Image (tube, one colour):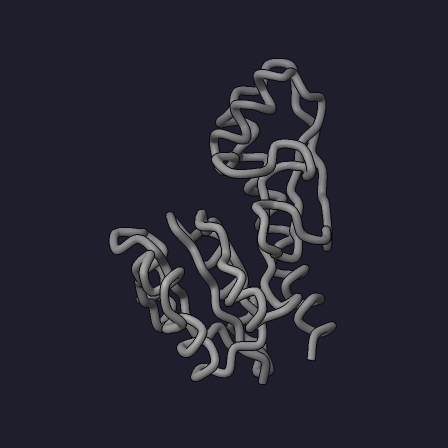
Length: 190
Protein backbone atom coordinates (compact mmCIF):
# COMPACT_ATOMS: atom_id res chain seq x y z
CA UNK A 1 0.00 0.00 0.00
CA UNK A 2 1.31 3.44 -1.00
CA UNK A 3 0.06 6.35 1.07
CA UNK A 4 -0.38 9.95 -0.07
CA UNK A 5 -0.82 13.13 1.96
CA UNK A 6 -2.31 16.09 0.12
CA UNK A 7 -1.62 19.67 1.22
CA UNK A 8 -4.03 22.38 0.02
CA UNK A 9 -4.82 25.96 0.98
CA UNK A 10 -8.08 26.57 -0.86
CA UNK A 11 -11.00 24.98 -2.63
CA UNK A 12 -9.41 21.59 -3.11
CA UNK A 13 -10.81 20.62 -6.50
CA UNK A 14 -7.48 19.01 -7.44
CA UNK A 15 -7.35 17.18 -4.10
CA UNK A 16 -10.86 15.81 -4.72
CA UNK A 17 -9.97 14.84 -8.28
CA UNK A 18 -6.89 12.94 -7.09
CA UNK A 19 -8.88 11.21 -4.31
CA UNK A 20 -11.56 10.12 -6.78
CA UNK A 21 -8.91 8.88 -9.21
CA UNK A 22 -7.43 6.55 -6.57
CA UNK A 23 -10.73 5.59 -4.91
CA UNK A 24 -10.92 2.19 -6.58
CA UNK A 25 -7.18 1.47 -6.42
CA UNK A 26 -6.54 -0.92 -3.50
CA UNK A 27 -2.80 -0.19 -3.61
CA UNK A 28 -3.02 3.58 -3.03
CA UNK A 29 -4.58 5.47 -0.16
CA UNK A 30 -5.11 9.18 0.31
CA UNK A 31 -4.32 9.02 4.02
CA UNK A 32 -4.82 12.65 5.01
CA UNK A 33 -5.60 16.08 3.60
CA UNK A 34 -3.81 18.91 5.40
CA UNK A 35 -4.47 22.63 5.20
CA UNK A 36 -2.95 25.77 6.63
CA UNK A 37 -6.38 27.45 6.58
CA UNK A 38 -9.18 26.49 8.98
CA UNK A 39 -11.85 27.70 6.55
CA UNK A 40 -10.40 26.09 3.39
CA UNK A 41 -13.14 24.34 1.42
CA UNK A 42 -10.76 21.42 0.84
CA UNK A 43 -11.57 20.33 4.42
CA UNK A 44 -15.27 20.03 3.49
CA UNK A 45 -14.28 17.97 0.47
CA UNK A 46 -12.15 15.73 2.73
CA UNK A 47 -15.19 15.07 4.97
CA UNK A 48 -17.37 14.14 1.99
CA UNK A 49 -14.62 11.81 0.74
CA UNK A 50 -14.19 10.23 4.20
CA UNK A 51 -10.53 11.25 4.25
CA UNK A 52 -9.13 12.63 7.51
CA UNK A 53 -8.60 16.37 7.26
CA UNK A 54 -6.45 18.44 9.56
CA UNK A 55 -5.27 22.02 9.85
CA UNK A 56 -1.96 23.26 11.15
CA UNK A 57 -0.38 26.54 12.13
CA UNK A 58 2.63 28.36 10.77
CA UNK A 59 4.42 27.37 13.99
CA UNK A 60 3.58 23.67 13.42
CA UNK A 61 4.95 23.91 9.92
CA UNK A 62 8.09 25.98 10.34
CA UNK A 63 9.09 25.91 14.02
CA UNK A 64 8.63 22.29 15.08
CA UNK A 65 8.45 18.86 13.51
CA UNK A 66 4.82 18.00 14.32
CA UNK A 67 3.89 17.80 10.63
CA UNK A 68 6.82 15.50 9.84
CA UNK A 69 5.89 13.30 12.84
CA UNK A 70 2.29 13.12 11.63
CA UNK A 71 3.37 12.15 8.10
CA UNK A 72 5.74 9.49 9.46
CA UNK A 73 3.03 8.11 11.79
CA UNK A 74 0.73 7.76 8.81
CA UNK A 75 3.55 6.10 6.83
CA UNK A 76 3.21 8.62 3.99
CA UNK A 77 5.15 7.75 0.84
CA UNK A 78 4.35 10.86 -1.22
CA UNK A 79 3.33 14.41 -0.37
CA UNK A 80 1.24 16.12 -3.04
CA UNK A 81 0.80 19.90 -3.03
CA UNK A 82 -2.51 20.80 -4.66
CA UNK A 83 -2.89 24.54 -4.38
CA UNK A 84 -0.76 24.84 -1.26
CA UNK A 85 0.75 28.31 -0.96
CA UNK A 86 3.46 28.13 1.69
CA UNK A 87 7.11 27.50 0.93
CA UNK A 88 8.05 23.98 2.07
CA UNK A 89 10.61 24.04 4.92
CA UNK A 90 13.97 22.39 4.44
CA UNK A 91 13.25 19.93 7.27
CA UNK A 92 10.23 18.53 5.39
CA UNK A 93 12.19 18.33 2.13
CA UNK A 94 14.94 16.41 3.94
CA UNK A 95 12.37 14.07 5.54
CA UNK A 96 10.80 13.41 2.10
CA UNK A 97 13.60 13.80 -0.48
CA UNK A 98 12.17 13.70 -4.02
CA UNK A 99 8.83 12.66 -2.51
CA UNK A 100 7.03 16.01 -2.53
CA UNK A 101 5.45 17.14 -5.78
CA UNK A 102 3.53 20.26 -6.76
CA UNK A 103 1.39 21.45 -9.62
CA UNK A 104 1.85 24.97 -10.97
CA UNK A 105 -0.64 26.68 -13.32
CA UNK A 106 1.95 27.87 -15.86
CA UNK A 107 4.83 26.62 -17.95
CA UNK A 108 7.74 27.00 -15.58
CA UNK A 109 10.22 28.59 -15.36
CA UNK A 110 7.91 31.36 -16.59
CA UNK A 111 5.35 32.79 -14.16
CA UNK A 112 6.73 31.03 -11.10
CA UNK A 113 7.95 32.17 -7.73
CA UNK A 114 6.50 33.83 -4.65
CA UNK A 115 3.09 35.37 -5.25
CA UNK A 116 2.63 33.60 -8.58
CA UNK A 117 -0.37 31.37 -7.99
CA UNK A 118 -3.94 31.04 -9.23
CA UNK A 119 -5.41 34.07 -10.91
CA UNK A 120 -2.19 36.07 -10.39
CA UNK A 121 -0.53 33.74 -12.90
CA UNK A 122 -3.39 33.82 -15.41
CA UNK A 123 -3.65 37.63 -15.28
CA UNK A 124 0.11 37.93 -15.93
CA UNK A 125 -0.04 35.49 -18.86
CA UNK A 126 -2.96 37.42 -20.41
CA UNK A 127 -1.30 40.81 -19.76
CA UNK A 128 1.85 39.63 -21.55
CA UNK A 129 -0.21 38.41 -24.52
CA UNK A 130 1.30 34.91 -24.37
CA UNK A 131 0.18 32.52 -27.11
CA UNK A 132 0.27 29.46 -24.84
CA UNK A 133 0.21 28.52 -21.21
CA UNK A 134 -0.20 25.27 -19.34
CA UNK A 135 0.71 23.34 -16.23
CA UNK A 136 3.95 22.14 -14.72
CA UNK A 137 4.09 19.24 -12.29
CA UNK A 138 7.43 19.27 -10.50
CA UNK A 139 9.44 17.94 -7.60
CA UNK A 140 9.57 20.40 -4.69
CA UNK A 141 12.84 21.85 -3.41
CA UNK A 142 13.68 24.77 -1.09
CA UNK A 143 12.62 27.43 -3.61
CA UNK A 144 9.20 28.24 -5.01
CA UNK A 145 8.51 26.46 -8.33
CA UNK A 146 12.14 25.51 -8.84
CA UNK A 147 12.32 21.71 -8.61
CA UNK A 148 12.84 19.23 -11.42
CA UNK A 149 9.98 19.13 -13.93
CA UNK A 150 8.06 15.86 -14.09
CA UNK A 151 5.50 16.89 -16.72
CA UNK A 152 4.31 19.92 -18.65
CA UNK A 153 1.07 20.13 -20.61
CA UNK A 154 0.15 23.09 -22.80
CA UNK A 155 -2.94 24.92 -23.98
CA UNK A 156 -3.41 27.75 -26.44
CA UNK A 157 -4.26 31.23 -25.21
CA UNK A 158 -6.73 32.85 -27.60
CA UNK A 159 -6.46 36.57 -28.33
CA UNK A 160 -9.77 37.30 -26.61
CA UNK A 161 -9.26 34.96 -23.60
CA UNK A 162 -9.77 36.50 -20.18
CA UNK A 163 -7.87 35.33 -17.10
CA UNK A 164 -11.03 33.36 -16.17
CA UNK A 165 -11.09 31.67 -19.61
CA UNK A 166 -7.45 30.70 -19.17
CA UNK A 167 -8.11 29.45 -15.63
CA UNK A 168 -10.78 27.10 -17.02
CA UNK A 169 -8.37 25.74 -19.64
CA UNK A 170 -5.70 25.23 -16.98
CA UNK A 171 -8.16 23.42 -14.67
CA UNK A 172 -8.98 21.01 -17.49
CA UNK A 173 -5.27 20.22 -17.90
CA UNK A 174 -4.86 19.80 -14.14
CA UNK A 175 -7.79 17.39 -13.88
CA UNK A 176 -6.58 15.38 -16.86
CA UNK A 177 -2.88 15.12 -16.02
CA UNK A 178 -2.34 15.58 -12.27
CA UNK A 179 -3.82 12.29 -10.93
CA UNK A 180 -2.17 10.18 -13.62
CA UNK A 181 1.19 11.91 -13.08
CA UNK A 182 0.89 11.36 -9.31
CA UNK A 183 0.30 7.65 -9.99
CA UNK A 184 3.25 7.36 -12.38
CA UNK A 185 5.55 9.21 -9.96
CA UNK A 186 4.35 7.12 -7.03
CA UNK A 187 5.28 3.98 -8.94
CA UNK A 188 8.84 5.30 -9.42
CA UNK A 189 9.59 6.03 -5.77
CA UNK A 190 10.40 3.41 -3.11
